[in-house]
Amino acid sequence: MVGALSPSRAGDYATCALLYRFRAIDRLPERPGLAAFRGTLVHEVLDRLFDLPAEQRSQGRAAEMLPQAFSELMAAEPEAAFALVEDAPWPAPEPPDVPDAARDRLLGDAAALLDTYFGLEDPRRVEPTHREQLVEVALDPDVLLRGYVDRMDEADGQLRVVDYKTGRSPGQQWEQQAMFQLRFYALVVHRATGRIPGRLQLLYLGNGEVLTYHPDADDLDRFERKVRAMWKAITRAADAGDWRPRRSAKCKWCSFQQLCPEFGGTPPPLPPMPVTESSTTVVA
Image 1 (tube, rainbow, N blue to C red):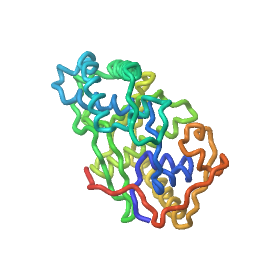
Image 2 (cartoon, one colour):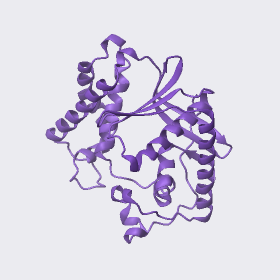
Image 3 (cartoon, rainbow, N blue to C red):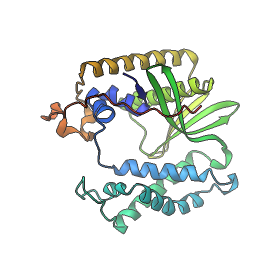
Image 4 (cartoon, one colour):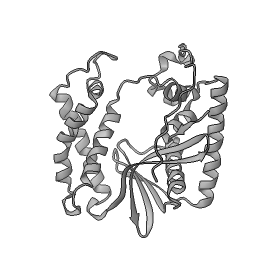
C-alpha cells in the first residue's frame, strides 16, 4: 500500500484502527464541528496578524480581523454553518442560515482565545520564516510523512516550531498523544530541512498552557522506527481488510458509533481499492 501519513491520521490509527479506516480509506463524511471551525477561524486571524508590520500586531487589530475572517471562511466553506447551528438536520442539501446570536457567540469565544494568545507571546517580537506550511518527506518509497506547520521561526539561532491549539492542554491521560504530534512534526521538519528543531511548542489557547519539546537525534531515530512500525501495521491491516475497533474513553466523541461493531453497528463494505491520503508536492 502506498500513501501518506499525517499526525492526525497516525493519531487515529493509534486510537482505533477502524477509525483510521473510516477516515483514510472510506473517507466517510463527518458533520462539521464547532470546535474545529472556531480553531480554523483563530488560526486564520493569527496567520493574517503576521502579514502586518511587527508594530501593528496588536490585540486590537486581531479583534478587528475576526468579523471579516469569519465572513470569508463562511463564504469558502458554507457547510460550516452546520457547526454553528447544531440542531440543524445533517446531512442536508443546503446549509442552514446562521442566527446572529450564534455568530456573535462564536466571535466572542474566538476573541477570548486570541486574548489568551497575547498573554503567551508578543507577536511583535516574532518574525516567522514559514507560516501554514505543508511539509512532506518520503520516509521510504511507499509512504510520505506530511504535516501542516502553523509557524516556524528562528529563536536564539535555533529553529522553533509553533502550533496553535484552541482547546485546553491535555491531562496526563492524553499528554502522550500531544507529545506524539510534537515528535511527528520534529521528524518531518528534520527530514525536510536537515535541521533538528531546537524547540517545538503547542500553545493551548483554551487555558494558556504551553507544551514544549526539545528533540535530539536519538529520540527522533527512535520515533522514526515507531512510525515505520505503525505504517507496516497499517499496510498489513489494509492487505487483510482487518480494521478492528478499539473501545476507549474517546469513543464518546466518535462520529461513527452507528457504524461500529462495538456499538452494535456494521461498517460499510470496503472500497474496491484502498484509498489513502493523496500525495502532493514535497515542500521543504
